[in-house]
Length: 471
Image 1 (cartoon, rainbow, N blue to C red):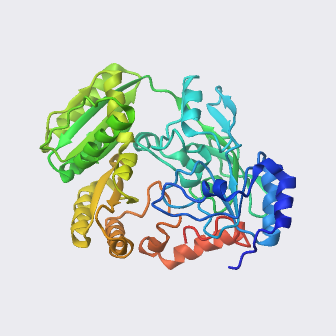
Image 2 (tube, one colour):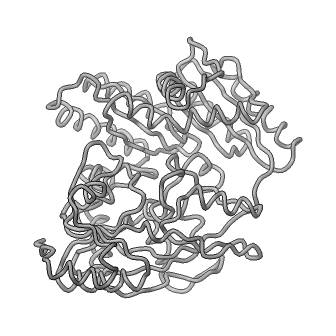
Image 3 (cartoon, rainbow, N blue to C red):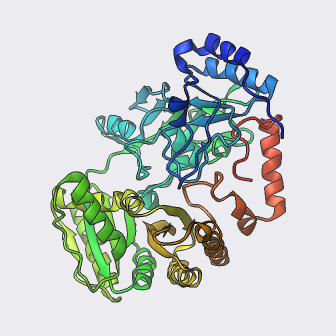
């Protein structure tokens, strides 16, 4: 599709809509909006706009739709699939001024939030009122809540509490045509027409620009227990996960990481936080499970913890660490949360987040290592294996640029083929964006993709909103 350029006349109209101070044309400032956390992609937009109301976005979209100018909505810039990058230049709409928690309704356990609120800020605000918003992506200290909705983010607590879409009741959305709609109602049950709310969740900013979100909340669990369980092999750790669930235990977190991930992260944390990690990781163990149980009853939690330990003793497991202090729990979760930045600090990576049914995890992780040997790359694996979501960081290390862009890309394709053959799919929470777009035919038939294109056309007749993503 041929898009129009952003002329000086259009820039003047943007300034009239949002104010001159919120129209960014300086190249150095625009560069900050050209990339996210995905490898080394960079696409410089023609202009960056920082609107403050849905009505301003509506006027921007009407103008861009009229002139067929591409528009890319952007949150906190923490994406890992290139989903918010302006690959066709044009306009970036930054949501950073939409940063208010509008209401916390304690009686109905709901909150109305603007999309530019940082996820951890929102979590802390509801926690002060004894309420709980569970989705917790690793970037929660910097990512925007609207981006979480657009990518349907998850995190460690998804295994018990679900992902972002499980907490979204209603959305105010500006469509590519400039129309402003609410997608649903602020109710727990709704059988009125198509579920546009859920369609927006995970749509990666291709169908509309979210300007308000109504979340449902939960009561905050008051107690937790954390176990660190070392295993001789990755496969043994993966096998243990399914058995823990078969035993009737529902962890609030079930995280997996390899020894290499732990060692790199311990070194990273000690350098970044200037504090020695006290947790001991035995040298003869290749994999670790970090299991968290939460609730409000100490006896129930201890009973479940004992059941978990009984289950894992059937496998090649080392000495289990029972974290009995808040400081020790915090240290264990600090290690887990910092694996991604630690690995990325060590080497340029291609970060994938495949997902399979839990019982197929052992075959998946063994297969990934075999593919790495075949195609000449090392991978560091970790992730939310309680729900089957494995993060695979393929490291460049000494690989040549040519092989990195050809042979390794083919190897990642083989990982995706293996994942699909095991009943899984390409992404559990990072999204498709541009990074995984070439692999979509591995996971979906042309009939599926055709339906998606039809939905896109219905929302965005001129194809101006976040073009070139997903399919």
